[in-house]
Image 1 (cartoon, helix red, strand yellow):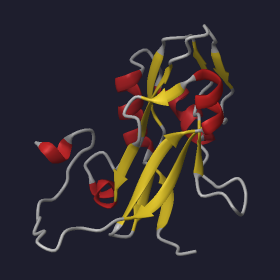
Image 2 (cartoon, helix red, strand yellow; image 1 turned 180 degrees about the vertical axis):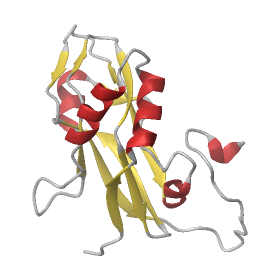
Image 3 (tube, rainbow, N blue to C red; image 1 turned 90 degrees about the vertical axis):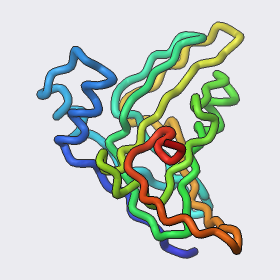
Amino acid sequence: MERVAQFEKVTFKQFVCDWKVCFQDISTTKCEEIYNKIKLPKRATKGSAGYDFFTPLPLKLKSGETIKFPTGIRVRMEEGWVLKCYPRSGLGFKYRCQLDNTVGIIDSDYYYSDNEGHIFAKLTNDSNENKTLLMKEGEGFMQGIFVPYGITMDDSVSEIRNGGFGSTSK
């Protein structure tokens, strides 16, 4: 296995800033409690390809509901690699729980953005069986897989990223 990346927490200052965008009525003290409990993504078994991301808070999503939240996580990775994020397969199978962007793509240069490369998640419980998704704090909800990628022979891009969610098409 090639070692190509390192997960880290974003700074507390960045976490509070991003958390308050998603949850306006939260105190800095509560943000600190959540931040201190954040677990870095990890593989469950030796043969696992995916690194599990863990919920920073308990989640309750009724059928048709969506929640967006910052994970508190960023990742530094070597150029030529991408982190692809998917919902945990059990959540998709049992609840049709999905990431709203279907597959999250975390590019290697996102780490250097003004927001420290803070990875967000937006989940929807798309159950058509009226099931409510209940997750405890610290439970795995998403998995990230590192994948190498190639570029075309005539590629000459020199632009530098600053931001996420559509920032490369501006």
